[in-house]
Image 1 (cartoon, one colour):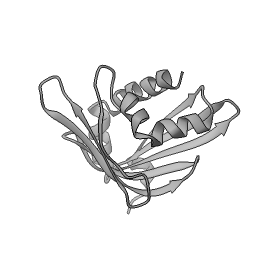
Image 2 (cartoon, rainbow, N blue to C red; image 1 turned 90 degrees about the vertical axis):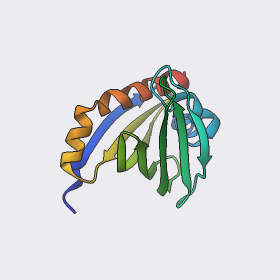
Image 3 (cartoon, rainbow, N blue to C red; image 1 turned 60 degrees about the vertical axis):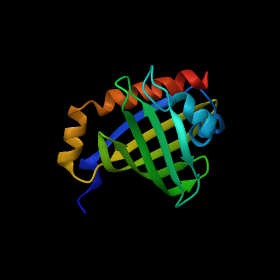
Image 4 (tube, helix red, strand yellow; image 1 turned 180 degrees about the horizontal axis):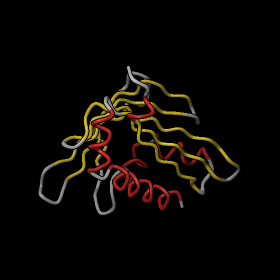
Length: 147
């Protein structure tokens, strides 16, 4: 497999909330439903089996009546440190790995989010489709939610 760096989109944020709070926002379905989608969209948590090998599935109804489906299987979970999962965001992105890394910093949390694509070409295509804006909008909602 080629070096994952050239296949990875990385987004870094510092959340003004303690790590425990940020972790809960990421791992509890009632919280996930509040922020896991771009502004103005609603998220329904269909499945949330938060363990290694467990499946998650979230559905967002789109304005045109179609559904946007996000789902994956957790491959690694280290409490208050990282969550790694496969992910499909249908109909836009499939076969990626998402890595959420958490690092406590006093009352703040340093957060790194990696989206690892199967190929560099696919990563470039996703960047052109606005992957940074999409996740940027989601994490802006998370920031609001944490307040």
